[in-house]
Image 1: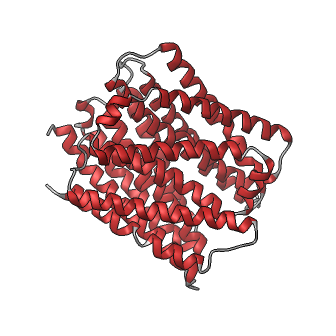
Image 2: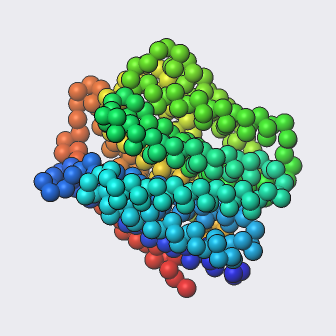
Length: 403
């Protein structure tokens, strides 16, 4: 094993440990919905959970995988790179531990700001490290993902002035939050995963149409910018927003169609069963995501998304767990960041069971609520199903810890 792979595996263990902690926090949130604790503010704890999801798991895992794919070995082996990854842990745990006390206040905002600084540091490091490399579609997409990571940072910076002006809870306040979520989920995380998928495809098939690559890149860029309009439909804006959002969603579906056409079918079939299954789950999750965004451009479905909280939770987990996390697991197994063991296999099967059943419950409850029906003891059943996630994430981390 090369030194750079050993370094990346070391930090990827931390990312998996963070994923385990994240699953415990998520389970605790579902417990609070069954047995509220007066001393614990659910909303504050939810802030801690979401910020740790983006920083402790999302940023750390994706930055490691992007580094493995694109950054030269000598930079990975350098001090600056390792300092960056170590430093990223400080704001991640700082936000996890500070948000439950008061939500947004001086300490949690300080850690949020530090996380943004780490983000910008990684963006600059990545651009500098890859400036001499050929402008492949995968690299262009990775760079675009990092640009959106930087742009998403404007959201937290804008929250302070918005709240200071007494507009906390106003439409502007929520639009700023949705701005951050949109460019994190659809910009940084989704595009980052797509760039890794493209890199894998390029390694399998060197022949690629430059014209199609440019079209795909253009469609991804335009669709991600303009689908932010879909995040504004909750407030029933002018019809133009529905048209812009719907048009952008169509462009996104077209981009995904071009991406899926590039998949090397023979190489896909030749993958080990576990890897192929994980990859197909991730691709299916992204396809469903694109379809849901297209439907959300219609007023009827836009209203449902605003009114039915579990529909939003199901969608966010579909992207974060189904698309993002499953692809991270595929990549890390395929390229040796985590060993393929029996414990890993059982952990992934258990993770899939917990993910699938919780998504099934969330979307079924959302569908039932349209007709004023509900799943009996829904919160309790959802909590029981979610019990599968922490031990599955623990199994993933323990697998990575094996020598």
